[in-house]
Length: 161
Image (tube, rainbow, N blue to C red; front, side, top):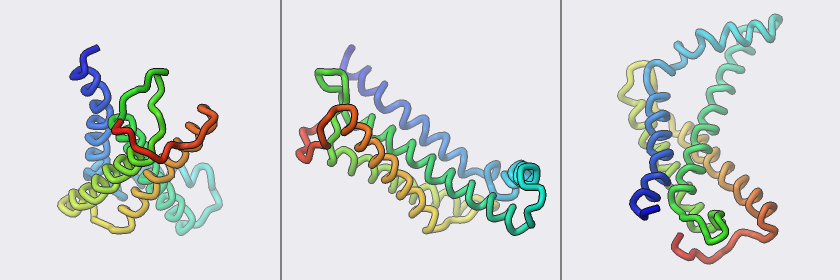
């Protein structure tokens, strides 16, 4: 496979996911819109819950979704930044993980900036923190899985992959 094609195949999923995250920042995924289906869902599974409890559940789901979507983004960035090794695996490299986290964190900040222009949305520094934490958690989980699967710890030196 040509290097150009390989690079496109590495970066395309990340760019596509960034587009999906951008879509999630639109009016269609604002609190009033998502509460239309999350509210009845929580009232169905928690019929005796107060309105405050349902609102807290909706809030928790929305914040967990933030962490999850940026965890996926960080993993896709990590994948895009490195080539497979001779054995077919992408070796764990802390420097690459740091760059992947930085991509996710910068995109989180730009996403909040984008939301500041959407009338039904708002920008929140706390969301950037949640997004960045989700990205870090996903990368740390990947490091643990890599360590278990490969039988050795993450490499400290960055070989440029």
